[in-house]
Picture 1 (tube, rainbow, N blue to C red):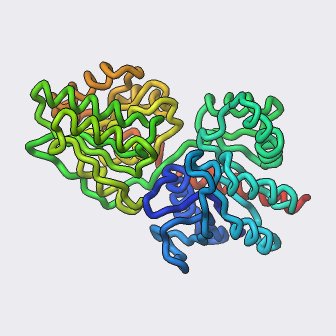
Picture 2: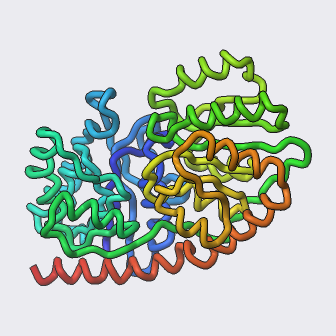
Picture 3: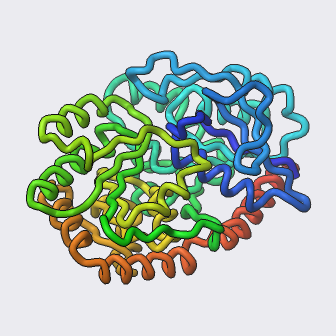
Amino acid sequence: MRILHIVTLISTDGAYGGPVRVATNLTREVDGGRYDVEVWGGSKGYAKGTNYLDGVRVKLFSATITMPALGFATTIAPGLLLSVFRSRRTIDVLHIHLARDFVTMPAALLARMLGIPYIVQTHGMITPKWGFHARAFDRLFTVPALRGAVQILVLTPHEKEALTSVDASLSHFTEFINGIRVGLDVRPHINTSECQVLFMARMHSRKRPIYFVRTAVDLLKSGRGAKFCLVGPDEGELPLLQREIKKWGQSATITYEGALPPSMTYQRLAQCDILVLPSVDEPFPMTIIEAMSLAKPVIITDSCGLAPHVQEAGAGIVIDHNQESLTDAVDRLIRNPLLRRSMGLHGRNLVRQKFDISLLADRLRLIYDKASRVGLNS
């Protein structure tokens, strides 16, 4: 059975983040036996002829973000669509990581037109929008793409509600969470002197890195001994962050390390003591799951899809959206190494019990089998 994952953008700086990580993780786990799985996507930064990433077979197509101010929504990769068309007789199932863009959305509509069975996984990226242009786009593209899918994979009930707000007729949902391979050979580093607090995400206003920097400034001014690090590609917030750091003279203790290729994020997470992600309405962040697998305590907001799991397991601190709450939570963990260790161990157990990708892979094979039968019967 030939299965292709379709993602919007695969880049050397890992800018598209979670959906690419999910696609490669699932491919690595499911590929083999009678399942022939690979990842196709628009690409930036990789050498021509790159066929493998992180041990996963990929096919990369030159991508252009036609209007950078609008972000990934204007990404195009015409070669990908042409290759799907040319391969239409050999594809059994498409697994499309769907967003409002001009890579995955046209791929879904093309699959529907060609009669290729496909499932979509939206990663919380499709939420209700009420502007005229957004509603027109949804009517022309999003709604037909969702209706044509054999299954719609959602992370949480909240995501299901968001999609039914886009199209009330949708009913073919399957709740399918993110997971990782448990027991990866990465040894967590223990900082014996100075606590290291890490922000690892895009420097984008929705991720709220400025909250992280302001918390760092407040705690350093109060005499807390810690190092604060930001890792991730810039998407407009970096000048503001740098001005804030320079303003308070904290360049030695608050550092921006730039973007990392996806293959190096585990190693970087292993070096920190606390992972902080203060973003609002974050669906199901992979970096949080990865950090917990390394026994790192996490700090997230109560609108994050992982918040109930983290809170119930005692794997970190769940806060509201206020700056003061973030500062208090980081301060509490900096001052209490035993609490950091306890929460970290709870997080590692949580990942082993709920987010082991081998369990998800078994479910996904059944979903692929069902989708392929739809194709045979059509």
